[in-house]
Length: 269
Image (tube, rainbow, N blue to C red; front, top):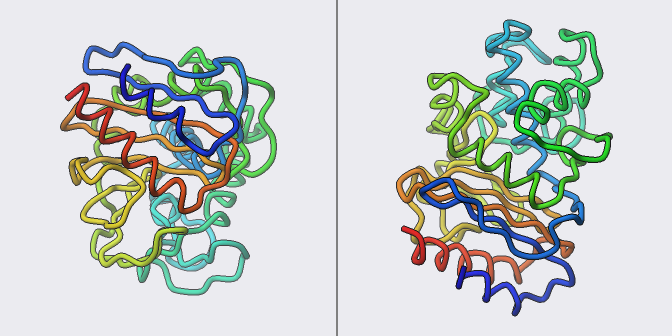
């Protein structure tokens, strides 16, 4: 892909990328065997596991969890009223979009308790294995500690584009803005009103500036990680992308990521 030529100019020591085109073919760039820290891209993997568990009947989106009035749905959509870190609520549920690692760690603990197995074991058996994803044993926070190489992450982003593990109604719910009127902050970008978010994936909406391309449709969904990783799916263009790197998110990413994503869209749409 010509778009991959742009990556050579990035100020990043190690970077790999994958693009899923409209035919479902996966195009790869960079070291295919190096595992990268996904940081907050981990949250989408966690959300997928939670949604699979809901379909199995192990969990329900309406399960009460945490403070009064808070549910699994609230926590998946960063609307549970919990701060970025810390177990003390800062708001009532459904009041603001408060981006929260704590909420996702609560979800993992809830799933582990209901499934009677460690959280990452559940992810491996319910998400990774069915998709053919093979990795080192995962550990740490469900909000930020997953590690995958670009090949295995591409298998997950292909699932995000054309889900095999989720029923269509569940998938549509996951990529539709929840509590759509809420304002909130996207870490590293700023405050948006509204700040749309699905059940795991961020929804692009009208956010500007943003880490995705300005040419993306408003219904584009995905997530970025502070370690220099991102995944997105544009359902209008019918194209998906994943990038992993080893330089933390900063102003360099807001310069180079949208340019690269625009080139992908131009080449494949």
